[in-house]
Length: 420
View 1: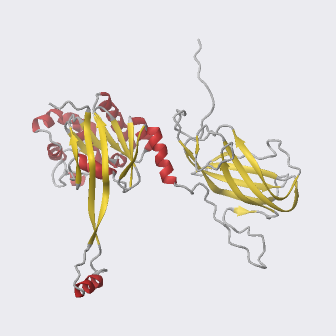
View 2 (view 1 turned 180 degrees about the vertical axis):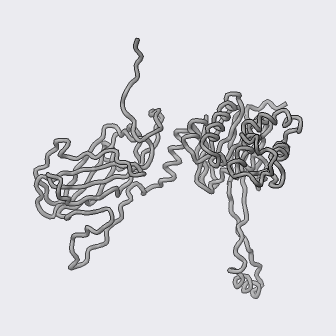
View 3 (view 1 turned 30 degrees about the vertical axis):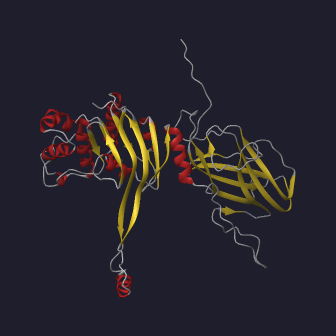
């Protein structure tokens, strides 16, 4: 009798695939090697997973996240025994129900009714078990009017509805769900999530693969991050999702402004035809930095963290009463805020030569995401632009466990109260 507290035990799993060269394009290469007495290989090896160790406890809902090609779906196929490893072993304790590929286990020429029985049998369930659950399966799918039609007449959404209905209603111990839910319509997706939550409350084990990080965070007790076939991090959802965002953004990608070409002799200083930049250039913005309060550069900032924005300038002549301003936009272009020194009653009498102006936030109110950042210098009336860079930098904000809000663009400092 198995007394393990784990539903799944993954021990040093590795999986490789062969990638084949185009025979036509490499015919000359093969022929020359034959003349030299060498044997040409028409394929190379690609390791989709390498030395993965992971235990999933019974009753846990675990999310697998990572970039495309990171090995998430391959690992699910190994757990469900659709694929077999080239190294290591996987022990699963309990019946597994799988929804990985659209229409997997369906025969296009057979009816929905016939495919329900076939699909469930592939998952390891008896005909009697399926008959007992058949009405629930069809009702959940909403395909009562189409259940006796060949599934080749079904849309991709109908495929998903029927496949998920089988997977969720045959009462498995372990449910594996890949990104296929994204194919269904919004109402069915909500219905599926609700069913998964019920499944979770029953103490079943769920592995959920998705690029929908909001759903992953809401559903999962634990998240596993895969990258290039390796397990990078596992733990609390907010911590692992934050690490995933760090990985996606990458070091050095915080500021996206490109360097201007060197100015040749005799070339005019005014380069106002640069994309998203305009102004007379009597004073120029030479750089924007995101810093902490100690003056250290930041690759990322977290919601609620202090932030200092430093705008460096070079005034080619004395400029009286300049106004420095910034603006923040969502990555879809929604204007969030646009403070400047004049509105904040911070008067600058004159500038000349090189220097910088800083704008300090006590607490970044932005929710996780990537934001577009503008910086500009104008005359006091706001009529003449000396130098304006529009939405030319990126500010990346990461998750923090202290912030319960996840929807929208900003968090507002506030509190709730109850009265009578």
